[in-house]
Image (cartoon, rainbow, N blue to C red):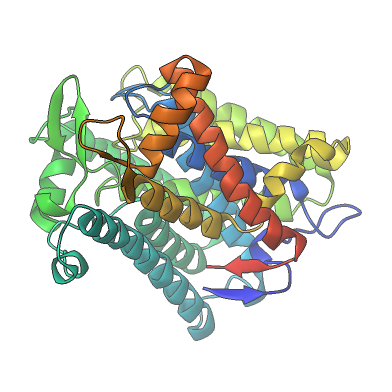
Length: 401
């Protein structure tokens, strides 16, 4: 991770009359802000329905934030690989591998930091807290982004552009067959996704999920379900090619709306046989969310880059110009306020986490409602992150990961 006082290539897009497609920055910023919002309620037991993930099959607004960012990563990857003329070489391979490794290691570091700080705050010795690797979650949001970027970017350089849609189709069809023959749509230990993760990662390195009152080690960012995520990223890559090949924003909007409509309708229609499911990243989830992301990007281009309504979106620019850094910042701050304990006579144990104090002792009495207070906490947490991002934005500091 390094500082650079210049515009990141992933955000630089030639547009008519401008050197930048602001709508893409704003979509990226909205997505990062959304990820921070849904990951940081005051209480996981008090969440408004749209701010919760679908328990298993289904789609909520919260289920859109991660796939939207995966789509954006694909678009940005196309822009960033232009300087290599989309040719696989030692230089392009080095960039891809280096960035993928850095992102993956940052994800592991955040997971370790969470275990470390919680261990220290719960009375573990320094040695036990530092070397607590036996229960570290190996996969997650950042590792999945790393794997999809590494494999997807490499594949995009090795495969002829006209064959990329066929590669996407092959991945999704293959994954569909695996799901149908491997009990892939069931939340159970017999699910092929769970079986592979248990054997390769081990249950101690997996996420524990609960569906219908049943609790299992089932990782929503597992190894096998990364396969359709690569196809997801490649769809974004194709949209990047479509945007770059078109100089007129109105024509871009037309293409994005057509593609988005086709993908969205295809996903919803096929969902009668293949349910939309984020936790297994089902093929219909890929089609539907990529379609909605394409439509939303087209809408933002119309609002921002054509109509010029930009004042409302300044808030999201602070998130959009340093997306991965802002996501990591949110994760680290969340771990800190959720782990550090302070004295509190109002609770039986006499101590409470900083997050618990703010939510239970301050916001709930003020708001008068647990769920509303939980939302207020999440909004305040977003503002905390934004205030840091705003400083970087005003100083034109772009942190590239």
